[in-house]
Length: 175
Image 1 (cartoon, helix red, strand yellow):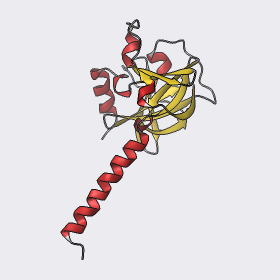
Image 2 (image 1 turned 180 degrees about the vertical axis):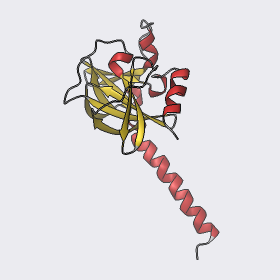
Image 3 (image 1 turned 30 degrees about the vertical axis):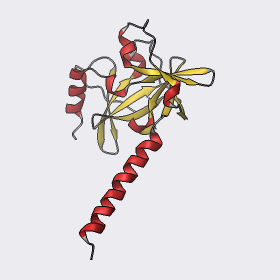
Image 4 (image 1 turned 60 degrees about the horizontal axis):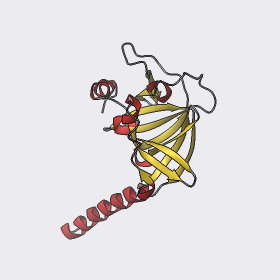
């Protein structure tokens, strides 16, 4: 027989585990390349990485939303990061990947040129983006991570889509 006290303790242990899991992901970033530049996104948003596959086009979507894929029965919208950043298109190849991230409880795939490794970047090594960047793409940048002698542009997953774009994508993917 499980007592109320034991049940509360069990749920408290679950809560502690979730906090520990979140803490273990803090400061960890998935590195990837787009147009020869290194980027990173917080690993806590990443659900999986898959190879490029057939993308079904969806009419009347922004040009950077390439369409949707069927991932084990779940329809997932796919954004081409190159196109989003107004970089020249590159044919997809064997290194092209889709990083599936969770955006406001809805999955979205991000097409990138290649995926690197998961890197730990302590918060003190992440600085604000330069103020000289006033173009539209600067709003997607959460910060600049210093890794040895190199830098990683850390993207803010929540800002890759505008409000109306996020709503349109949310309607494409049932919760």
